[in-house]
Amino acid sequence: MIYASYFKSENKSEIRLVNDSGEDIKIFETPFKVTSIIQSGEDILVLDRYNSKIWIYSDENLEEYFNTEELVRPNCFIITELGVFVGDKYHIWFLSSNSMKQKIVTLQHNEEEEEYHGKGVISMEIVGNSIIYLFDSDSLYSTREIYQFNMETYETKKIITEDKMTELNIGHGIEGFYTRGKQIIVWTEDQFSEPIDL
Image (tube, rainbow, N blue to C red):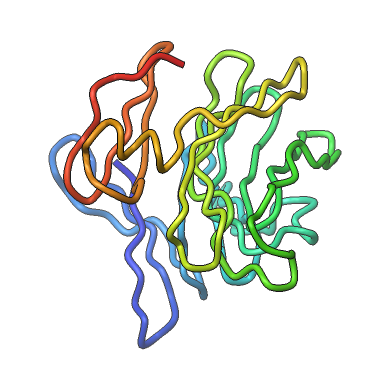
Protein backbone atom coordinates (compact mmCIF):
# COMPACT_ATOMS: atom_id res chain seq x y z
CA MET A 1 0.00 0.00 0.00
CA ILE A 2 1.28 3.47 -0.92
CA TYR A 3 0.20 6.53 1.05
CA ALA A 4 1.19 10.15 1.71
CA SER A 5 1.93 11.75 5.09
CA TYR A 6 1.77 15.55 5.23
CA PHE A 7 3.88 17.61 7.66
CA LYS A 8 2.12 20.96 7.88
CA SER A 9 4.84 22.82 9.81
CA GLU A 10 7.40 21.93 7.12
CA ASN A 11 4.94 22.02 4.19
CA LYS A 12 6.14 18.70 2.86
CA SER A 13 4.72 15.28 2.14
CA GLU A 14 6.39 11.91 2.46
CA ILE A 15 5.31 9.19 0.06
CA ARG A 16 5.55 5.89 1.89
CA LEU A 17 5.07 2.21 1.12
CA VAL A 18 3.86 -0.48 3.49
CA ASN A 19 5.23 -3.74 2.06
CA ASP A 20 3.82 -7.26 2.43
CA SER A 21 5.71 -7.84 5.68
CA GLY A 22 4.22 -4.66 7.22
CA GLU A 23 7.40 -2.59 6.99
CA ASP A 24 6.74 1.15 6.45
CA ILE A 25 9.33 2.58 4.01
CA LYS A 26 9.81 6.17 2.85
CA ILE A 27 10.07 6.28 -0.97
CA PHE A 28 10.48 10.03 -1.53
CA GLU A 29 9.27 13.42 -0.28
CA THR A 30 7.75 16.48 -1.94
CA PRO A 31 7.89 20.19 -1.00
CA PHE A 32 4.07 20.43 -1.12
CA LYS A 33 0.92 18.76 0.20
CA VAL A 34 0.02 15.64 -1.78
CA THR A 35 -3.77 15.27 -1.99
CA SER A 36 -3.96 12.13 -4.13
CA ILE A 37 -1.56 9.40 -5.17
CA ILE A 38 -1.66 6.63 -7.78
CA GLN A 39 0.91 3.98 -8.65
CA SER A 40 1.15 3.04 -12.32
CA GLY A 41 3.63 0.25 -12.93
CA GLU A 42 6.97 1.47 -11.59
CA ASP A 43 5.87 5.14 -11.67
CA ILE A 44 4.07 7.06 -8.93
CA LEU A 45 1.86 10.04 -9.79
CA VAL A 46 0.98 12.57 -7.09
CA LEU A 47 -1.53 15.41 -7.13
CA ASP A 48 -0.49 18.82 -5.79
CA ARG A 49 -3.90 20.45 -5.40
CA TYR A 50 -2.77 23.84 -4.11
CA ASN A 51 -0.22 24.43 -6.88
CA SER A 52 -2.53 22.79 -9.48
CA LYS A 53 0.00 20.28 -10.75
CA ILE A 54 0.49 16.56 -11.21
CA TRP A 55 3.98 15.19 -10.59
CA ILE A 56 5.46 11.88 -11.67
CA TYR A 57 8.12 10.02 -9.70
CA SER A 58 10.06 7.76 -12.02
CA ASP A 59 13.61 6.36 -11.83
CA GLU A 60 14.11 8.23 -8.51
CA ASN A 61 13.29 11.61 -10.11
CA LEU A 62 10.26 13.81 -9.42
CA GLU A 63 9.15 15.78 -12.50
CA GLU A 64 6.11 17.84 -13.41
CA TYR A 65 3.61 15.91 -15.51
CA PHE A 66 2.85 17.51 -18.87
CA ASN A 67 0.04 19.93 -19.68
CA THR A 68 -1.18 20.85 -16.19
CA GLU A 69 -0.95 24.66 -16.56
CA GLU A 70 -4.74 25.26 -16.90
CA LEU A 71 -5.85 23.12 -13.98
CA VAL A 72 -7.60 24.97 -11.14
CA ARG A 73 -7.31 23.28 -7.73
CA PRO A 74 -7.58 19.67 -8.95
CA ASN A 75 -9.06 17.24 -6.43
CA CYS A 76 -8.79 13.84 -8.07
CA PHE A 77 -7.38 11.96 -11.01
CA ILE A 78 -7.65 8.55 -12.68
CA ILE A 79 -5.05 6.80 -14.83
CA THR A 80 -6.27 4.73 -17.79
CA GLU A 81 -4.60 3.10 -20.79
CA LEU A 82 -5.59 6.19 -22.81
CA GLY A 83 -4.15 8.78 -20.40
CA VAL A 84 -5.09 10.67 -17.25
CA PHE A 85 -8.51 12.12 -16.34
CA VAL A 86 -8.34 15.02 -13.86
CA GLY A 87 -11.25 16.60 -11.95
CA ASP A 88 -10.72 20.21 -10.86
CA LYS A 89 -12.81 23.14 -9.64
CA TYR A 90 -14.44 23.85 -13.02
CA HIS A 91 -13.80 20.93 -15.40
CA ILE A 92 -12.90 17.32 -16.00
CA TRP A 93 -9.80 17.19 -18.23
CA PHE A 94 -8.21 14.45 -20.27
CA LEU A 95 -4.41 14.44 -20.57
CA SER A 96 -3.11 11.93 -23.11
CA SER A 97 0.32 10.35 -23.25
CA ASN A 98 1.06 12.28 -26.48
CA SER A 99 0.72 15.63 -24.61
CA MET A 100 -2.81 16.39 -25.84
CA LYS A 101 -5.12 18.09 -23.33
CA GLN A 102 -8.90 18.25 -23.71
CA LYS A 103 -11.78 19.58 -21.59
CA ILE A 104 -14.19 16.66 -21.29
CA VAL A 105 -16.81 18.18 -18.96
CA THR A 106 -17.54 21.77 -17.94
CA LEU A 107 -19.27 21.73 -14.56
CA GLN A 108 -22.62 23.48 -14.07
CA HIS A 109 -22.38 25.40 -10.80
CA ASN A 110 -25.34 26.94 -9.00
CA GLU A 111 -23.44 30.26 -8.95
CA GLU A 112 -21.51 32.44 -11.38
CA GLU A 113 -17.94 31.19 -11.89
CA GLU A 114 -16.28 34.19 -10.23
CA GLU A 115 -18.53 33.78 -7.17
CA TYR A 116 -18.07 30.00 -6.88
CA HIS A 117 -15.85 28.88 -4.00
CA GLY A 118 -16.79 25.19 -3.85
CA LYS A 119 -14.44 22.30 -4.55
CA GLY A 120 -15.79 21.22 -7.94
CA VAL A 121 -15.19 17.53 -8.71
CA ILE A 122 -14.51 15.78 -5.40
CA SER A 123 -14.06 12.24 -6.67
CA MET A 124 -14.70 10.23 -9.81
CA GLU A 125 -14.62 6.75 -11.29
CA ILE A 126 -14.80 5.36 -14.81
CA VAL A 127 -17.46 2.72 -15.39
CA GLY A 128 -17.60 1.36 -18.93
CA ASN A 129 -17.85 4.39 -21.24
CA SER A 130 -18.96 6.77 -18.48
CA ILE A 131 -17.30 9.02 -15.94
CA ILE A 132 -19.22 9.02 -12.64
CA TYR A 133 -18.33 12.06 -10.53
CA LEU A 134 -19.26 13.64 -7.20
CA PHE A 135 -19.65 17.38 -7.60
CA ASP A 136 -19.82 20.23 -5.08
CA SER A 137 -22.25 22.55 -6.87
CA ASP A 138 -22.30 25.48 -4.44
CA SER A 139 -19.89 27.44 -2.27
CA LEU A 140 -21.50 26.37 1.00
CA TYR A 141 -20.62 22.70 0.35
CA SER A 142 -24.32 22.03 0.95
CA THR A 143 -25.28 20.61 -2.44
CA ARG A 144 -23.31 17.56 -3.46
CA GLU A 145 -24.68 15.50 -6.29
CA ILE A 146 -23.44 12.62 -8.46
CA TYR A 147 -23.42 12.92 -12.22
CA GLN A 148 -22.74 10.51 -15.06
CA PHE A 149 -20.98 11.69 -18.24
CA ASN A 150 -21.22 9.38 -21.26
CA MET A 151 -17.94 9.61 -23.21
CA GLU A 152 -19.57 8.32 -26.41
CA THR A 153 -22.64 10.58 -26.57
CA TYR A 154 -21.18 13.49 -24.50
CA GLU A 155 -24.40 13.58 -22.49
CA THR A 156 -24.38 14.39 -18.78
CA LYS A 157 -27.13 13.35 -16.41
CA LYS A 158 -27.65 13.77 -12.69
CA ILE A 159 -27.97 10.35 -11.08
CA ILE A 160 -27.99 11.05 -7.32
CA THR A 161 -29.40 14.31 -5.95
CA GLU A 162 -29.78 15.66 -2.43
CA ASP A 163 -33.53 14.90 -2.76
CA LYS A 164 -32.71 11.27 -3.61
CA MET A 165 -30.54 11.10 -0.48
CA THR A 166 -33.48 12.30 1.62
CA GLU A 167 -35.70 9.69 -0.04
CA LEU A 168 -33.16 6.95 0.79
CA ASN A 169 -33.19 8.12 4.43
CA ILE A 170 -29.44 7.65 5.00
CA GLY A 171 -28.57 11.12 6.19
CA HIS A 172 -27.75 14.45 4.59
CA GLY A 173 -24.67 15.37 2.61
CA ILE A 174 -22.95 12.96 0.24
CA GLU A 175 -19.41 12.29 1.45
CA GLY A 176 -18.39 9.85 -1.27
CA PHE A 177 -19.31 6.91 -3.45
CA TYR A 178 -17.95 3.80 -5.09
CA THR A 179 -19.21 1.65 -7.90
CA ARG A 180 -19.71 -2.10 -8.01
CA GLY A 181 -20.53 -3.33 -11.49
CA LYS A 182 -23.48 -1.28 -12.73
CA GLN A 183 -24.46 -0.15 -9.25
CA ILE A 184 -23.38 2.74 -7.06
CA ILE A 185 -23.09 2.87 -3.27
CA VAL A 186 -23.17 6.30 -1.66
CA TRP A 187 -22.16 7.25 1.87
CA THR A 188 -22.93 10.14 4.16
CA GLU A 189 -21.57 11.02 7.61
CA ASP A 190 -24.17 8.59 8.99
CA GLN A 191 -24.20 5.46 6.84
CA PHE A 192 -23.92 3.71 3.48
CA SER A 193 -26.76 3.34 1.01
CA GLU A 194 -27.97 0.08 -0.45
CA PRO A 195 -26.66 -0.44 -4.02
CA ILE A 196 -28.45 1.82 -6.52
CA ASP A 197 -28.70 0.84 -10.21
CA LEU A 198 -26.97 3.20 -12.64
